[in-house]
Image (cartoon, rainbow over all chains, first blue to last red; front, side, top):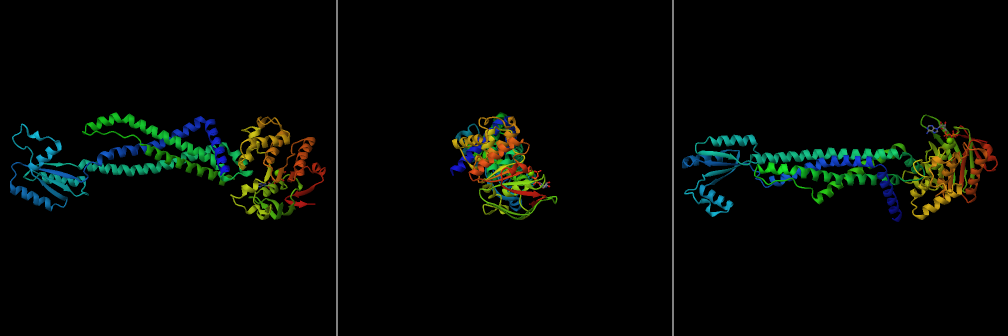
Length: 301
Length: 217
Ligand SMILES: Nc1ncnc2c1ncn2[C@@H]1O[C@H](COP(=O)(O)OP(=O)(O)OP(=O)(O)O)[C@@H](O)[C@H]1O
Ligand SMILES: [Mg+2]
């Protein structure tokens, strides 16, 4: 155990020595790792920021069918029948104008909403929930069909854009997975290559060490430390890059969201996420280094 | 201590460097290995250290079959062997001191023990005071002494020296051989190769003569 600690301390000393001796190379490697890691991480934060908003939105596509004030009971009955038969429709709820007003008052939280009004200005309405798997095109078709009905004043397709956004996010998540896999591979290759360069500059030392009784793990250890250090610093730098990018983007994002009446900003990395990102970059770097050393040892010695 | 049983070594390309060699070297013995260039001297020493694997036969060191040892076990056998390479394998990117400490680092020595042993080894080979020099600043003979210091710093039981007297004048070569004799006197098993047999004659030891990979009388 003491022996093992000593070997590790020795390896660490050699690692730092190497990094200090080649500061420009070390810095460049670190930046490449940081930039490679900042893409998926930034993308992830962007997605999860948007998701916090969309999670609060209704997913089921809804249509509000507002009736004409002049609509007859026969017309309303016929419309109800038509909705019940339509296979694009999952659920129908009739909201009379009085109930709509009450809901509105409850939501706005003011009893004197009616001050100055002699009459309830809201129309009777059907709230139609479409089938969850209805495509945006089908929903638009449904809206147009309903709008042509004689008793109907107006049809609003409430959640079509929310549904689109949900799908867009689902697509983004898949895209993120692809990006993560590709950049993870790139990251392992980058560190693997950086370590390969370090191996080449120390080729003779490795050869002699091996000949006079060094184990593979003795040879490997300093390179794994170097890779872990690179991965850790690279991961931290990636978090810094991402936080900086979010800070830079946020004023513009806030203004854009305001035009939709939403208070929305991109969120900053959380401590747990920083730990996660650094963990991943460290593991990938070490894996890349391991492979580089293994290949060198088994090909040449 | 060292035993060869019908050992042959064929390199890729079909050259038989050593053929059907059988011999034994006792613990504490000093043996010379003579032969022309290409006779197989370096190959024989590499077989002992497990650097080359025999194509046939068995090489036993300390009753262990070196040729059968795996990647994991071999390093521990090599730590009992001090190696002086024909091509020196000195690391010119570090000081004399750091060259000599390498075996100690590998074994896991630390602290003042390292310094004490390195300085003792350098003193023994006559390089006291040169520890912070770069090896490039040493003469050929001094570089040879550096190699010897690195080979003995961890006090191995076996010392294999591949042409340690090459390119040295006669007097200097004798100094080096005297050094080896002093290791022999403290019980180290030594195998020393050279193609100049006249040097060995003065020492009256056993001489293994190789010719095209085979022993001659
Ligand atoms: N790695 C190798 N691959 C192929 N052939 C080799 C290799 N090493 C040595 N040989 C061949 O094996 C034979 C013996 O070589 P070895 O180096 O053992 O000779 P030596 O007695 O040490 O010669 P020298 O006095 O020149 O050092 C030579 O013919 C050489 O060409
Ligand atoms: Mg030779």
